[in-house]
Image 1 (tube, one colour):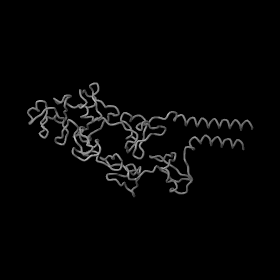
Image 2 (cartoon, rainbow, N blue to C red):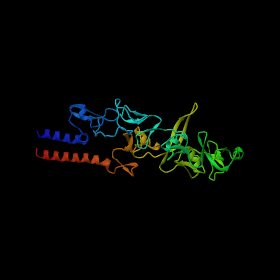
Image 3 (cartoon, rainbow, N blue to C red):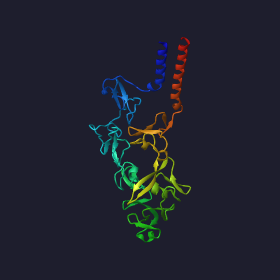
Image 4 (cartoon, rainbow, N blue to C red):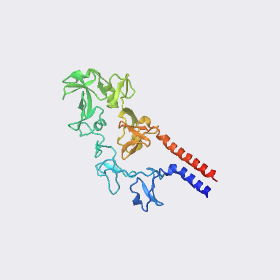
Length: 335
């Protein structure tokens, strides 16, 4: 009898390392498990599964968010209320449709690309069309930034040269903009540091003399450092594959680092490009990048590993094994 009790007690302690982490609640129907994410009633207990697949995971209380925001819950019967938003069948969450991005308050979906003079809320909408455009805060319209002028739907770099026709401008590879009576560089060219001549724009890693050359292709995150185009602090190089005429073209731009709380659709949206081959510190939940388990947020923008979190679980298991050994010794010594 003592030996049977000993075996039962030891097995219970060894299994507790994993079983204690599973929250089980008595139930009769699936409705009684609704307070947990991806749960169902099985064998009289609430049984929870991973986002993908049927692997059992610890049950977590269902997070409740307002359904009128991007990332809020939805079903096929109760679709997303926002225009240009779609309900993801797998996650049952609202996301902006293709070619749309969420507004800052996450309550609307905005067009990802807005042409010059088009209505905007975010500068990224304008810069998806032209790297030299910004969203004017009071006019809510895509306009060319300082020292650039709109011409033919594009922002052209202006020179410090007055003109009435193309004659004087052609000498420096420019054209005359009659509406402002200034010479402007043609598309693909940018002014030099003293705005007296036109020079080619530069791609990531190419040689440069001014930051403006780099920002023409890389965006506001570009910078000319040590005579080479690169990304400034808190930006990273992102390479996109674009379909050209009968050929594929890779273009690189400098994008802001993905920070805690950033909008996402999948876990990979929470990774910087250079980290794709390494485990990410963040994951996507409710359309926001949040810290992975055993990580915590720092400065409200990045996630770092919590010191000792990986060893805490091992310490718990070792402690239970020590208790088991002590119990075994006590019982065995009295047999």
